[in-house]
Image (cartoon, rainbow, N blue to C red):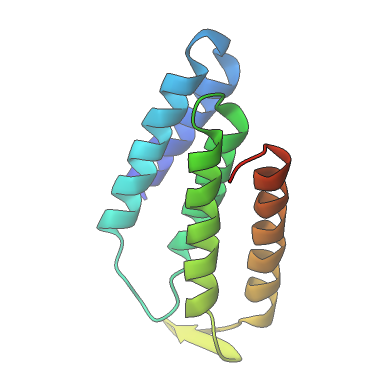
Length: 122
């Protein structure tokens, strides 16, 4: 979580500092990469969703690496989709229905795919 919080802080800075937006977005992506590398891989890998949203935000802010960041978001959402199979997931005594998680992931994936196309990415 520590890396994710740092990444989000960089995204917030990037949204307010037009002169350094691309550099700050890159720093955010670096910390999202560290977040993903440090995560515990479980049967249900919801950290991919958070990272996907972060990559998407970096793409929204960046002028230089927009397509790359959108691609990273699409990859993260697709990887998460593969891990959220079944009806529910139980962890720490709590059962979570997966249909709403799948739907939220699907909507996010479609949204970033639309941004990717609109930006002219190939």
